[in-house]
Image (cartoon, rainbow, N blue to C red; front, side):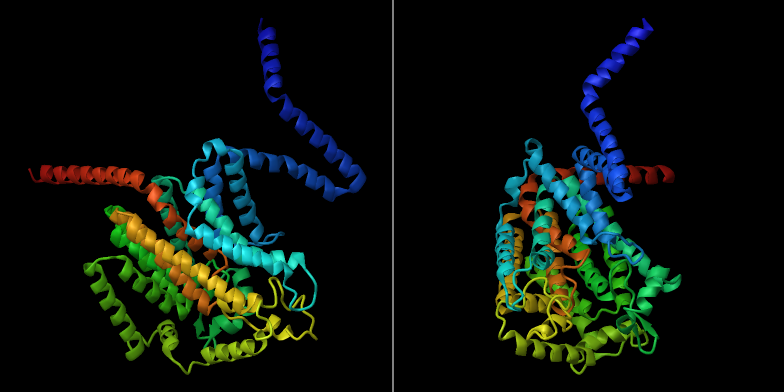
Length: 510
């Protein structure tokens, strides 16, 4: 009898899982064949295939796990101690493509496609369409180079569209939105901790190797007495601009939320990240914060907020420009030099721009996406453009796509910002949700200003964070009814805890 039951179970398992067993068996036979005929490399590739299949299967079952993995991997991918045998962009792209494929394949459970139909999608399609036309840009007379073009287009256009689609589809509830903001806060706090660690416990071997070689000229200043800290980022400029925009976002999240625990958490995050920003020594960061807060003055629609914000910004700027307060700190002195018109670094940048203007006149479409020192010959008329330091993301776009592309990018970016502002001002009613929208929008403007002065806009982790954040603004009207219910539930819990605490306090007195 026991034998029969056991036999039935095996039969049932084989019937249900026979396809998977057969597939794994065939893969095993194929791996042995490849090992015998082609050697170890092909054998290893075949052996990896079951893990790829397992990853895809797991992704379908745990799609939100893939989303959170994307956010975390994106944040740490430029850490000096992380080395990959593949391009750094590949893990991000694989996860984004997997998430999009899951949404398309499992379309029955994906009901969020209509949320992606907005003005931001229109602006991104226009920009991606322009970058597609750049495939036929042969300014350097080298013919069509699909590989170089795709590498450049992926950086400047396609990753923006991937980010937009992923955030539109997967930020689908108030709970997910709240978790995303808190995860961002935790990651930002870790980056601040890492700055403290670099200052007090020293650099890792990989970090020290980089700062003593490639990063020495820009990160070890004043005869070695001033070090610009870069945390988990690629360089200090990237970290400083990110920290400035993050500070703006969490400051606005904190002052507009009705939930006390979150208010304290967000405001503490803003303060700690602001400290980290100064440690980066990135002078543009001051202007990034100012731009974000000035935009919020208009979005707040409140004199009670606008007046103190205006006073605070003016007072802070006055201290930096017209006083010597804090000059004992080298980082503050460096920040203050951002207002010095005679600064040597700023003069070098202006000289570079003059050279670019001279050459770019004959290249209205730019030298082409993906064109650089490695594929533009030294005898080319545009070799100077391919090798000159761009200094900023906007200058990089200017060189690769010309005045036409630069104008197109600015127009598309302006459309996205104005569209986000209109969504906050005219489509949202809930004050705390308007605060979240304002935080994302003002942070986006902040990082755009950072991209005007430094090559940080399309770098990891900025692109996913800030273009993803702006995407969230456009889907907030769809989340608002559920958000109001979610917030009211949290407020009831908050009041209940307050009541219980008060009762315990009164009981102690008795």
